Length: 173
Image (cartoon, rainbow, N blue to C red; front, top):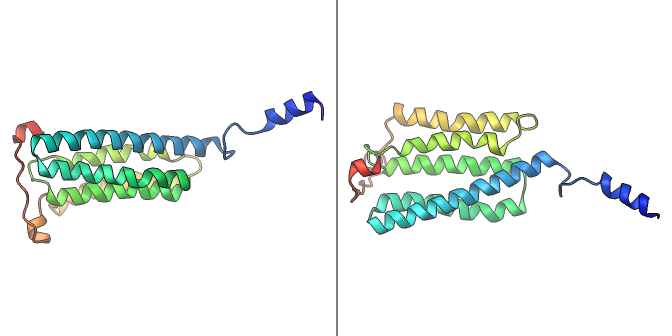
């Protein structure tokens, strides 16, 4: 084979490992967002632990654990189901944190962050169902938390008393 033929063959190969540039962009965005959430949640976990706020430390610890679990899974499986399950799991973590949050704290605002992530993680052209479902899920859960008054209801629903925060309420919000 001549040098020009091998150069033409190299030019015709896709630039991305999977051959789908949009899929690679979505997976890279998911990895970046996971690393970002891991960094932020570990930072806030250490801050809340240093300030003696057990509830804040536990909430951030759940987020950090979720990120640590999904980082190797993104390396193994690049599918849209994995990315959808990752965002679904973040919604469940926020919902569980709301059961133990004090009613004066605005933990439910984390749903706004998760509602924006599907636009980074899914393709509008190739994965519209996942994008729409994962976009509407945090909005539905946010509405449900207000309608059913879930924030701080661990004593009524689960029999577990709320842990009072040692921090000033104005400092938390």
